[in-house]
Length: 53
Image (cartoon, rainbow, N blue to C red):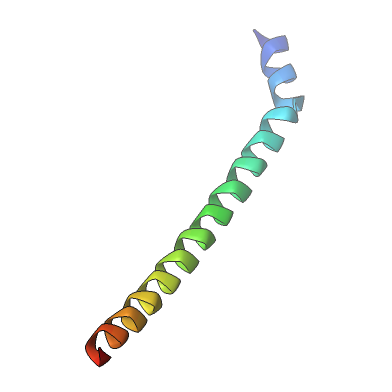
């Protein structure tokens, strides 16, 4: 059991996977924020065009 815990503590592949997961999560949050902002601006533009017609 002790050897298992020592190997687990030295294993870096799990830490790398967690880092990649955090990076992917951050990128997805940025993408969602950008799409939301662009979507709101685009809806305002279409509304102004529709009102002009």
